[in-house]
Amino acid sequence: MLITLRQLLDHAAEHDYGIPAFNVNNMEQGLAILKAAKRTGAPVILQASRGARSYAGDFLLQYLIKGLVASYPTIPICMHQDHGNSQGTCMTAIQYGFTSVMMDGSLEADGRTPASFAYNVNITQQVTDMAHFGGVSVEGELGVLGSLETGMGDKEDGHGADGILSEDQLLTDPEQAVEFVKATEVDALAIAMGTSHGAYKFSRKPDGDILAMHVIEEIHKRLPDTHLVMHGSSSVPQELQEIFNEFGGEMPQTFGVPVEEIERGIKHGVRKVNIDTDCRLAMAGAIRKVATLNKGEFDIRKFLKPATDAMEDLCVDRFERFGAAGKADSIKPITLSEMSKRYQDGALKPKIQ
Ligand code: G3H
Ligand code: 13P
Ligand code: ZN
Image (cartoon, rainbow, N blue to C red; front, side):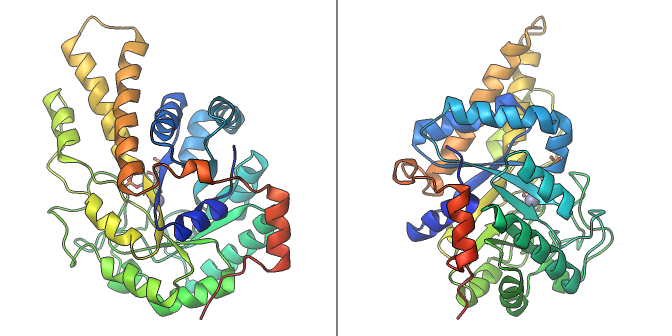
């Protein structure tokens, strides 16, 4: 069953849990996520970046989603655009059947230039106006993702801010967050607090100086009814780094966001937790293992099946740790037309004290 992000996150807030949002680029990743959801009885957020859309192709991707929805009819599935850079990216995602879009106006449309607050508010407002007419949810972002250790925006995935960023840019300002949510009426707010995309987030196990969990707590105090989103939330588990390196990989020691810090965020309003790198690493390690141990193997399924299994195990763990396991059964999807009516009636307007 397709479902909107707003409905899922409202349910998560009501029952105090978080939902991992896993990136999907191909059938195997889709299967790994849905098998894990079925095993744990969890609702699902699948998200496709612009890169994923061009990798798989929009036309094919829409049928992959339809196929997953049809194959797992009891699981509520939200299909979300990750890091939309423009009104066009968000609009075309909706046309291809996405039930949620992220308008990331923290950067300009080039994906490199940090945007002004006015630019961000204006473009996000345009997207919420448009998406809400269709009952589709919108995630906005305030603050620029990047490292508090180096001041660099994240570049690993080929997008992210250029140059050195100030602390003001790297940490979402709680007062501005209130203004932003009020003006844009977003359904969820992504915030910056020292995380970045990719494997190389921290050079040591992060403490409060480089992973600013207090920012989440301050924003949640001011916006208790707003669903918060943590990006760059892969944990880059040591055991996955070891498998990757044992079978010929070369990944220097690195640290991600500890799962217990995410659990702490979930206690303070974090409802959506973005994870891509951990899934990539789980699959890549499993593929390396087959390639190293069985040099004669050329049946691609013999690589992809263990890779899918490794990603499934990772997803199961996150569904369980974030409290999403067992929640699928109690969610009955509301149609897009009904969601649209609720937006137009003002029933879904942000509650700001
Ligand atoms: O936004 C970050 C995700 O990890 C997506 O990465 O643009 O390489 O698909 P990508
Ligand atoms: P990771 O690179 O930490 O998995 O973050 C993914 C993400 O934030 C996608 O938007
Ligand atoms: Zn992200």
